[in-house]
Image 1: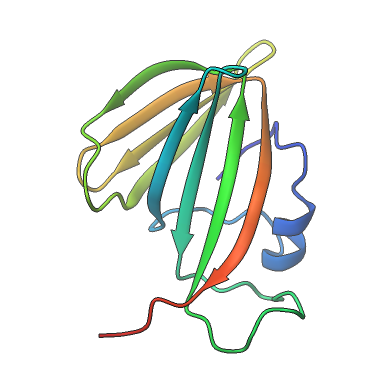
Image 2 (image 1 turned 45 degrees about the vertical axis):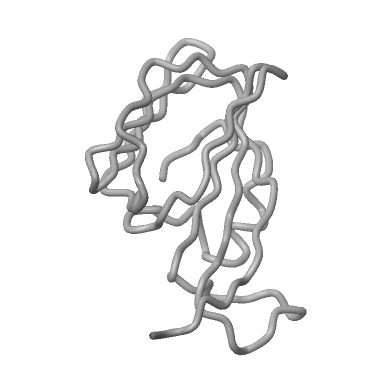
Length: 130
């Protein structure tokens, strides 16, 4: 993902060697708030970091990441479903904002512009295998 207005990319770049693409990740939650207004997106990926934090256990199979975007203007949000796997992410710099568009395999789309983005959390998870 090319988020150029990310205020705190250090954790992601230290763990992944850069900002991961987020293609193939699952979006578990999208929360809109009037404060800002802002949107928070919670991703779950099976892509393990190159360098995991020392406090993480050796046995985990997913990584949860939450990113908040502030002073948003939503252009489109449609067809939210049960399995929201990211198919495509594109971004475009505008004058003093960035436009971000997420397309999902289930035809869901989320498009908005924002002033700033911030990593809120990165945590390991264990969902197990069937």
